Image 1: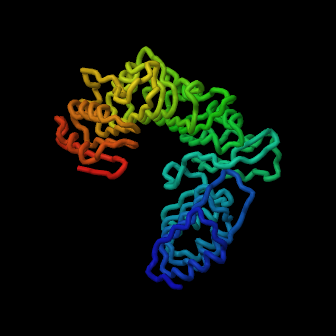
Image 2: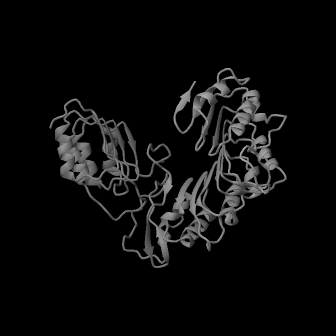
Image 3: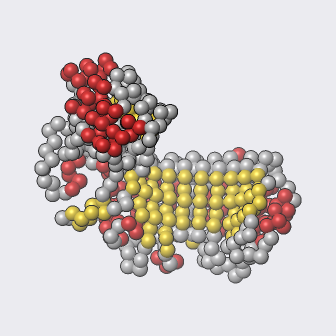
Length: 429
């Protein structure tokens, strides 16, 4: 099949043989951009020019060729330079089997307008750069995650002295001073993907010791005998004052095994995003979250409603707020479902007057009083609110009635959109 009009094709992270790439080139004779990116590595014992030779033979009209992390050698690069005479952009970052020096460097500079070298910075790499540990493989010392990540080694060596047969007592030692955790700014972990909770805890302890995280996302399945450790992890990243995004979610945990969030989290000046799901929010003397723009508090246990109000009131630039509460979420257990989920201050928090743009109110029970009282509070006090969402389940409330009641409120913001999401239908005005 011929595709003569196709000029751009992206097959990044797809495994194709050299023969398959030849079929692609023969079927798309007018290709100008061909993207064949993959996961790079700072040291690789694998070499192969099948991809490069297939591209050189069948895609002579290319202008743009990203080959991030490819295993081509100098021979493969020479073939591309010889046959792709219109090449303007060539991305060879993380291609550590090529050594662009001498005659090869001269040829590249003469034929290619923009050349990204193997050790060039990867900060603008357009694909996912979040560290995800989704598999575990055994090692002699226990379990070590099988990770996918991208390195940023601007100015590093070409690793020409690498011996693929070196043996390391510790699997991480092969990286020397350039260990992965020094290069990762975001971490997203699910404890259920580890063979056991102790392996999960041990790895996070070791990772955080030398990391420079800006984002930490933890999804935790905790059993009865698992040791508490999340409190100290959050305290560690909060005290380093680098963290911008914290997301802690427990898949299931009983009230007696909830972990307390550390006081340091509530005075973290760098925090932009905070999501807490099924944790204990204890007492604190002061709160200061001057940069926080998004806060999601879901099914937590609170020391008191006063503390919760203080938490919200201390976010002067808050733009996005979501609160989901449970009936037994503080020491004064609610005796009826129409108890307000937060103490409403007569003096509105600064964020309501200057920055809050989105509010979502959720209820799982028959709680029309709660919904309307909260909605009325935000309607009267939020000056620049752009959207209010009211959502409920397992209730006999009628969506049309709720929407009419909301429209009748004294709205301070003249541009606020209203969204009503009940069990039967969704209404937006």
